[in-house]
Length: 301
Image (tube, rainbow, N blue to C red; front, side, top):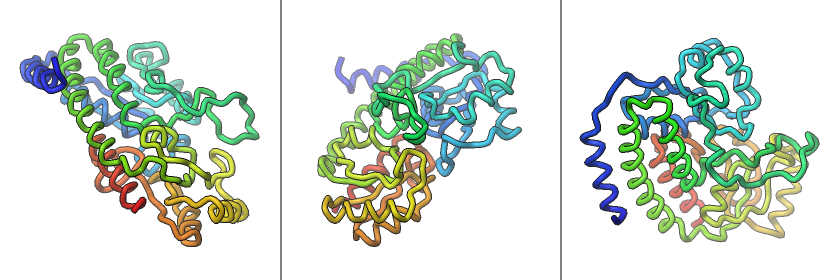
């Protein structure tokens, strides 16, 4: 059965799959996983995102409203790899909700399903905010989204077995549309291969690996450490010897360091949405990558 036939079969199955019961309450740590859970769950899930695209997911406060969501959640969907180490353990403990504790069907870590990049060979706080399991910003490669979707569809069925056929049908339909989109994005982004870039935070290794972008400098002297004026001058001097086409930052990053450097190096500073909701165009997972690719292509001209 070819890709188109599988897509049609999934669509037919989705049309006849009978919804069996009320929705799962899902608490997603980041918007991309909330969007994926919605794609796979449809009207069988109620999704609440703990963070938005303009918040640094490393650091948020576990406010009472978020704690209430955790207490009532049937499932927790997070990146893992210690991205949320600054707030999630406290939230889980204070929620007192046994369904979403590690090891339970209601606890899901996306990072378990992908090949992690930038896994450190040593752990030392002097090296900055380094994650022992590898760089956690896995959502910038759409191939990772596909891998996580496979795992999440299976776990949704385990957490809500009465609707297992529903989740499987929606997964098949999503997977077909996603693979077609990935093929299109890769064709459109071919001119980006080998393009030298500067990043503000080490948040794009998976995007670089997917598109063949070449990182030549980082504005943060160490992960999680804001760039000083002296370090920015050093990067500017480096770019005179080793030019780059653009400086990338996430929607939640302070734009001042990249704008300062872009003006002096006479290159583009590009704010990528980084997750769903990070730009006006990035309204769901598909438009997130549509917008990301188009912003990169525009800056590379």
